[in-house]
Length: 114
Picture 1 (cartoon, rainbow, N blue to C red):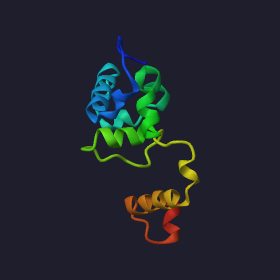
Picture 2: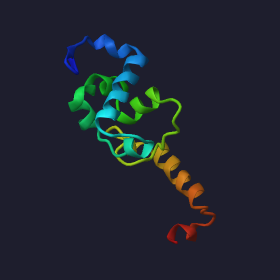
Picture 3: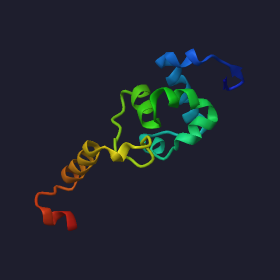
Picture 4: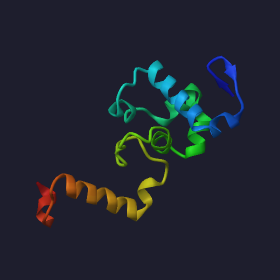
């Protein structure tokens, strides 16, 4: 496949440094300067711009970002971040509700309605 104007092998993605180089270049090209900017990026956008094998390797954009940018604390429940079937897992649903409970200091069932 092509990365920029250079044809490279799938093994290119074996290196986290190469993955980081690609993501940094993608960010620069698309004016992504913050975690919040990344949270608006869609899987298909990265795929179309040369990241298809990187995304396939990780299963989702969220997983790729977590692996490449280990120094960033990613919000597991940000919009546009999940692979197909993510929300069918009851443990993930529960973890999300627990996150909301803690964030909004929900102590009693009636607090969910405020």
